[in-house]
Structure formats: structure tokens, C-alpha cells
Image 1 (tube, rainbow, N blue to C red):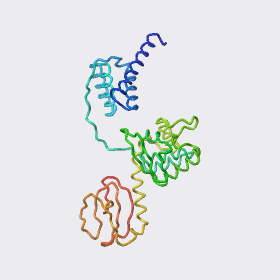
Image 2: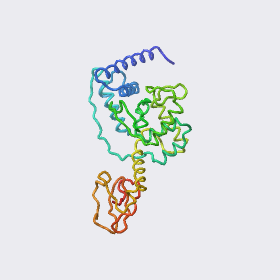
Image 3: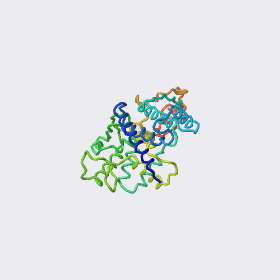
Image 4: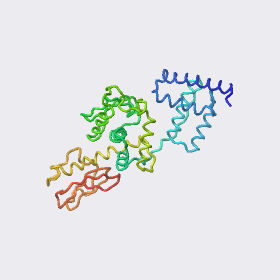
Length: 317
């Protein structure tokens, strides 16, 4: 049952959060997304800490989070929100930071899984979104904020404005990716103006939001029978690997690599040291994330094979 007391508390909370939002914007100069995160953190913790939390209450909260196995980013982001809030109410606190763990990146999507998801797309709009996400390296918010004018199909460049850290940058895409985006614009957005959003919702035509992209990725992954958990940020790892593999596969059929003498350019020469580099009967072995394999017969390389290796794999050079 909703009482007058609870309504009064909610009103006080919203007024306090509104003032906190203005403080973060005017005094701290934080981005809108950061302000939203801090406001959401204080709203979520309000039943535990109240509007004017004491220092020992906040200390107990952080200790509970650390002992409960909260992630590093969760603890740090909560600490930052609490520090800014206590500054705002005039009772500042300085909370400690745990040491940042150095973990190996795992769970990224393979190109085979991305291919399955592209095949599971039901229309050109879904395919364009997933293709651009996979082969441009854009973040969720960056892709949702794209305008039609930001995609230069002829030059195969995507112009990103106000990305992470409010930085502008250019992302390069493959010809195939540019072709899919062009086909989407011709079929789905023939009369759209350059300043309009690149991707919009189907029913209401609103600009695509980050939660819309997360939902699309989840739905298409389920449709493709991918059992792993999938979210947009995982698409940022495979593009470089796939481009390297395709580039080296093109070298295989080129006239330069079919010749008996292989000319290595500076960019292709591996920067890592090799063991037994003077051996002529067999190729030297080294370790690299990706490289070209040169099969030798005697002292002349006869074939060039493109293959992608993980760290620590033996590569001929």
C-alpha cells in the first residue's frame, strides 16, 4: 500500500537526485552517460544508505561488495558514484581502489559464429547492423549514434563522432561490409536525408538505442543456436583477425607470392626473434599471434599459406 510518507520520501529522493545531476554536469563536467550511471547507482543504493549516508555506512557497503565477489569495475564505479554524491551533500569521503586484475580476454566471438549470426538475419536491416558491428570495431553507443552521412561507402570509412572519451575517429570497413550497408540504404532508406540516423526502429522509426542493439544481438544469436552469452561488445575482437586472414589469403594467389623469390616488405617482416634463422633445410620457428607460413624446399620458399594462430603457436618465418 502506497502511503503519504512513501510519496514524500520519493519526492525528496528525486529532488536530491535532480540537484546531484546538475552538480555533476555543471561542477564536474561529466558526460551524460556517466551522470546517468551515477544517478542510477544512488537510486539503487538509496534503501541501504539513505539520503545522507554516514561514512561508516559507506565503508560497510564497500566491504560487503568486496567480500561478496563483486567485480573490479562494479566496485570502482560504485565508489566513484558515492564519492561524487558525498561531495554534493557536503560530507566528502575518499574510498580506496582495489588493484585492477589483469585477465586474459576470453569468450570473444569467432568468425564462424559471426557468420552463423549473419546467416540467421531475416532481413537486410539486421544483416547491415550485425555486419557493421562485426567488421568496423564500433562500440554499441557509437553504432547507435551514426548518421547516414557518417558512412562513406565509396571510401569504405565510417566517421565516428563523440566516441569513448568524446573523441572523433574514423573506422575502416571492408568492401563487402560497405556493400551490405549500401544495399540496406537503397532498400530500406531510399528517401532518407543525410542527417537522419543510420538505423531506426521498425515500428516507430526512432533512433536506434543501445538496449535495442543488445536485444537484437541476443535474439539473432538465439536464432543461430549459439549457446554462449552474446552482447555487442564481444564483436570488437574478431574483425582484425578476419581481415588479417583474408589479406593473407589474397597474397596466396597473387603473382608476387607465386614467384620463386618472396620479397618481404617492412610491414610483413615479423618483429619477433626467430630461432635457428640460418637453417636452410627447414623454416625457423617463432611465436606470434598471426603470421604468414612459408613452406620451404631447400633454400627457396615454394608456397605461402595464410593461417591465423593464437599466441604461442609455432609459425614458420
